[in-house]
Image 1 (cartoon, rainbow, N blue to C red):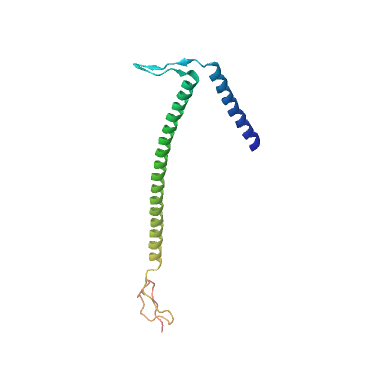
Image 2 (cartoon, rainbow, N blue to C red):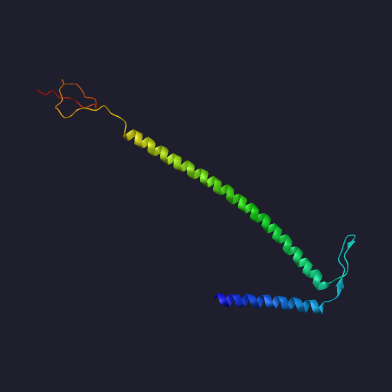
Length: 135
């Protein structure tokens, strides 16, 4: 498929160059360009048209470079903002994990439950459970 596409473009370029050559040989008259009070030297019509196309190409190329630089600048600013927001998300995630870990690991008063509790009826232990009296 690539060879067919390559052949197509070679054919298109060949037709354009051939058409330009035929145009320049059939229109060899000299023309003088005038703009307000300015006038050019007499130049062949084909050269005048070639210079006009070249100037148009150059102007559009410079314009596209300007737009490309502007787009790159916007992309750079957007990437910078994305990195800042990713750092903020990361710090907020870590902050919530640290807070959650702190809640689960809070030190509660330890109660020795290896021996039966001794206490009086109506008393509550450190966890708030009702203590019973053992004899």
